[in-house]
Image 1 (cartoon, one colour):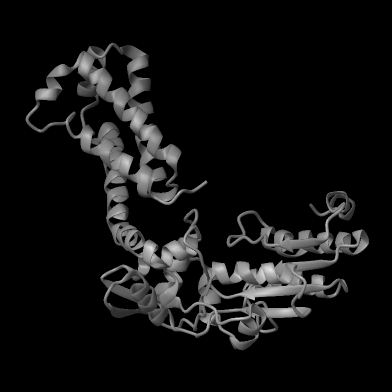
Image 2 (cartoon, helix red, strand yellow):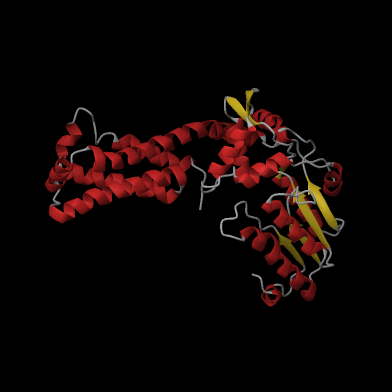
Length: 373
């Protein structure tokens, strides 16, 4: 919403506004500028005109005069639009925020659970803060004793190297220390460029630039505003959470292997169907299944295209609908084979029996893979 009048209609009777919108990928051209700057700027003009008492705006640590990334620059522009409006406002600039439902927290936990920890060379310090501490601060901002107007760095009590943060998360999960391996900066640059093309990837040129910039600040102002010391990184997990988080994080590499193996099955099947296995033999099997002529050719190449699509989606676009699509297709294939080609159930290589572990693996992905929209 870029229209001030549209925001004014939405602000009728509103006393306080909290703006926590943020995107990590500039998915469509101009998303950073629109969502971090122009939309909140219009909102804050409407707040002034509608008599809103107070605004809490979520920015990011690093959105300052030394900012270089497009993410930080757009965040800084939104901060300045709010502070220039004259309204009673506080700009919260969090470092890494840890919450169990958050994508970054899940990624760091899986990273920390590895037996060997790859640590990027050239990365700056981070100062992670727990989501509960952030929420408590917002509650205080909405109360009778609001925070001082201006910017506030929302950070944990200690600045940590990336390696130290990973070791702290290992302690939080009840795991022993692990050996760290330095990843050269050039390798991180290449991985970040590749990550730009992966849906949902947290490693992009933008995030790598921010990590090199560092993400730390003096902790005393936040502790004073919070009224207590924030949680240490090795205390991010409670006793009730520690066990299942440890198990889920340690299982992550196995899930990646499972996804890769399932993708390989679909991709190799597509290649074999159109390039390796004799087309005449494939058409003979389809004829026994009831498909002949043009219809059989369409089914052969259409099935290969579908296999290719499912293999790529398993690697690059893991979603619940991808797992369900594969389950439905495997059940359909198994039913047709059982009806028209039942001898394959007794084949010594077990081509149909292998569908059972495929279905079990897909069921595991449905249950254990992080939910993505």
